Image (cartoon, rainbow, N blue to C red; front, side, top):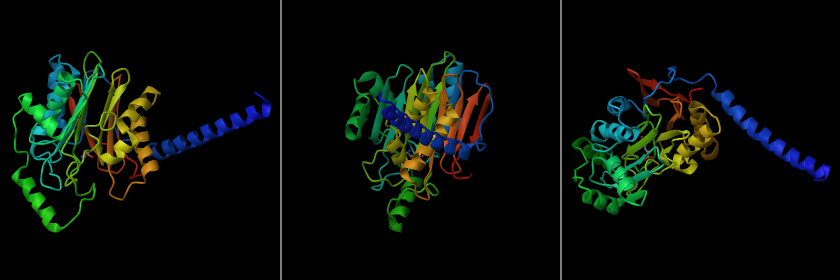
Length: 333
Ligand code: SD4
């Protein structure tokens, strides 16, 4: 290559690298010293999940793992606890309805062998994660949606259930009467989708994510939670990540896949979560009430968590310690 051209190419690449370096240096400087995280040295098995109800889900998942169960069974059994709990208001039974008063559920599951299953906009079924697992194991597909997913669930022997609790019916009527239109708002909506990641004694990683989505969403709206790579991603060679919060931003940046790919490049789970939140901040210019939270785990069992706004909590279970932590966030620094 002629020397001037070589110089220009090198200058271009150098400039690009410096630009990127700058961006990441800026991100890391801005974020450094702000991480609130558990300091345990990893020892398998380990379970990590989103929000305070993750404690009960972790409990069940760890029970499976301590009985020599596999991570895939642990993640399914774990999130089923939140799906059945009417006090968890963004998951399964007792979740917020959509703008027509119907509870519609999104869920997915991913196995250590890379297989995945998912359901979206599923009505009347209490355990969408288990339907997602059946999609993974009994069909050649990854995702079933709406009426088709419901019919499949019935064919598989799942019982129809009324998912709308009296409390949520009241909340819906109040919202309807208020004349308010749907607007994503992290401060008044319950952001409590459960994403749960587990690594078993053999070092195999699985994940599950399940939600009723954003309260009073448009009928038919599907969020990030059932989208493989957005709400959840597992690569058993590298690690796993899962998301909670305003799903549209996670979908636009394929957040969980991004985190796993960053870990593949050598980022720690914590650094990878921070970069994925930062990517959203740079690309999407979030609105004032925006919230998003990620958790991640790598093959060594190291974990990380990070959010856009303060208030995101996650539950981490290792040995005999099942504890709730406040994640760091971009906005409180
Ligand atoms: C969604 N990510 O449907 C979900 C909502 C959520 O806690 O996480 N709520 O966009």
